[in-house]
Length: 267
Image 1 (tube, rainbow, N blue to C red):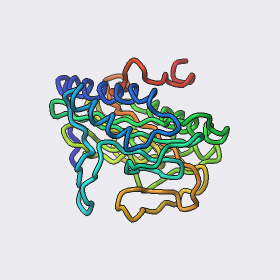
Image 2: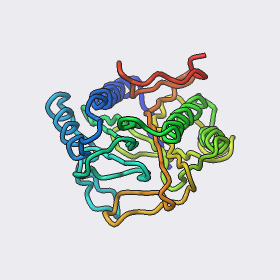
Image 3: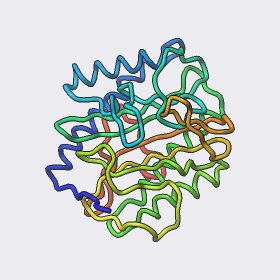
């Protein structure tokens, strides 16, 4: 495995791409409401990224080995969809939860982030799942520092989520990122402390736990991309791009409208 270590100039380029990514999510807040389709959200994002930010939406026509090209500029995963949901013409309805996953390429660097949006008035259970998933991501981020190991991140996320009665999707993980959309290392959201690669300054990767209200088993739909929970239980995901610094971590996907860290981080 070759993990690309980023220098100060590389990190600065990734900060820009990360901020643009987060600003797309900020911009979406006013658009996510009952009656809007994810196709409409996709077009809003595409035009904003291309014409306002003068950047590139990374998912559009992305085709890793064994996959047909992804047909849209964002991923939109609703309710029991875990990840890689393809935007379509179905209107969002009151109570839906939707993960919007944005990746922007600016000057060759990738920024990758996703947020949960609750459409209209969500149920107590849906709100709790989204909130716990957000905290789980931060439990993982909190472990990032030189000398820690990737297994420490996964263990922190897994134990927190499972103690809340939820399950962790294991087939998909965080990933290194930089000039490539998906680089080494793979960042599991479960695991044992003290295992896997040691973190060193200049490593950049995403932490993006997918957490299910029911069982962890998933399946792929016939479109070749969309992943859903087998038991049709709700699934949530949050994602940040994180750099390992000399003293800890830096979140690269931040912006003015970014949700604040949970209290256990700010304390």
